[in-house]
Image 1 (cartoon, rainbow, N blue to C red):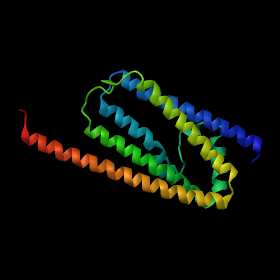
Image 2 (cartoon, rainbow, N blue to C red):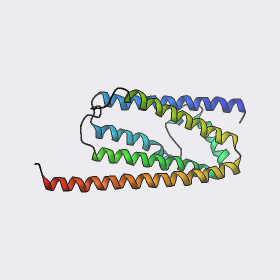
Image 3 (cartoon, helix red, strand yellow):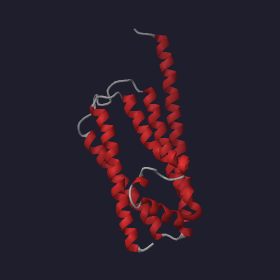
Image 4 (cartoon, helix red, strand yellow):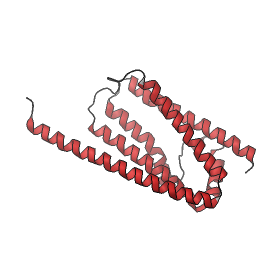
Length: 198
């Protein structure tokens, strides 16, 4: 692929990533400001983070929503050719993290009381959190694109192995902590129910 064409596709990729982020943010904040309950908001967040893993399971593509945008199928083919037999492993490293986050939100939906999510949250929360997430998302897209575009197959193979190892360990630790918190909550909930009101 020519450099000019690749730069154009990478710019579009970043643009489309931001568009999807805005769509997700509108959905989530729409729910929050309509005083949706905390479990509902967490379920929606869990679904959003499950889109990419489900795409990999169902159609073997990293995020089926990206493929609706022009040029993204072409970029997908380029990355598959560049990564070769490492492409699936590379994508799975992203999937592990997203599954861990999705399960975290789902457990939050189970253990949180059904109060409006917006209760008690300061205004700055709705400004700072989206801004930080948007900045981190853009940095992640740029760094991954730069790594793929500037590395040869052997370098990408080493990087993919390191990436899979890191995300696997991080995801397992995060899931273990999440499950421990969930079990502890259930045990405490059961003990509180036996005590009854004072």
